[in-house]
Image 1: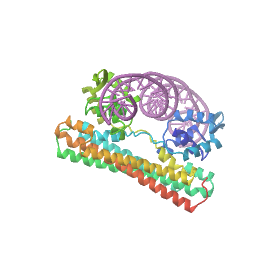
Image 2: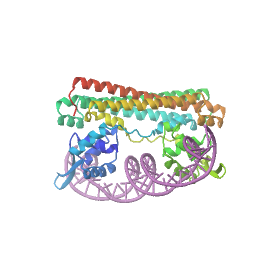
Image 3: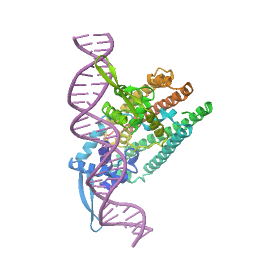
Image 4: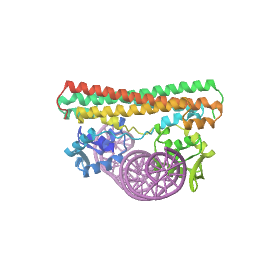
Length: 200
Length: 200
DNA sequence: TATACCATGTAATAAGTTACATGATTTG
DNA sequence: CAAATCATGTAACTTATTACATGGTATA
């Protein structure tokens, strides 16, 4: 159900269309929550019929119209309520670690490839997250900038502090995965040199 | 689709019933993959009809019967194939970090509670994982012990090395989350003392 | 003999993924 | 005027969650 609250959180900055939101789910928020448009559009309509959003048809070019969603007071209340509730931790599901635990079922080159891929994946995540953090710090992040403009000055510090803190955590997460993968590569080398015979 | 491969990996140690497997998904493997029985039983039947497992009715007590599943050669081949393929990284979905990014929408006590809960959750995970690591190291882990008994001695070192390495990674992951949550608590205190007025 | 454990499901949702579809608008 | 971008969906499917349901076996 977090998709709903991610949408609400985004819409506290400014009214947006489904397309705007889908874009945000690829970029900024995408670092903590991702969703395809086929999930976003129907959810927005459900949220509207639940009274959390107000949808307005605004003109787009000469003939076109687009639906712009604005968060309602009820929507803000729902976001606040969710925020104050204890978080439901979902069951562990970690394909990379699952696979690592059973790497004896493949050969050294394939095992190496796993860890190299893991490191590469998380290096990319780390770099993207660093970019996001930068844009929050220097206020060039468009959604954060809009959110600040819509909030009283006294709230600015905590609005950015929590977002910076979140990205710092995500960067550290990625760095940890990179280190782990690099240790994995060393482990494979060690196992291969001890026992150069085929594994399987 | 990782559920299927988690099941195959477990069944390389020894034949097991659906119940045995469900139990394993709460204990040991549960650290990397969890699944409810309502997902396990049907999946086992699908895997049997796909030829990856062989199901045998074995007597249980006087009248009872239970189905014991044994991995087939085809099942081993499927596991090996999956192991050598690049891992599909699933979209980011991190409710704890999502929430942290928008903590300005709640008050300091509720924000503190979030991080305290996060730290407590990951302390418990860390401790459970430490216990698992211990039982792998001293060979008291029942499934690992069976797996070693079924494997040639030359493979023992790498079988345990990969599992130990996996748990070391998971422990470090939990420790990182604990540190992050503790930093979060300090951040809230800092923000509250700077600006002791209500947040909302 | 009661309690914990073993064993196996079905049904109804909910959530998420993939593929298919379409058309208008802006920009180079 | 072509290409990129904006805009919005439906349909089929897979995966996962929650709740309900039942009954046998071992053990203290």
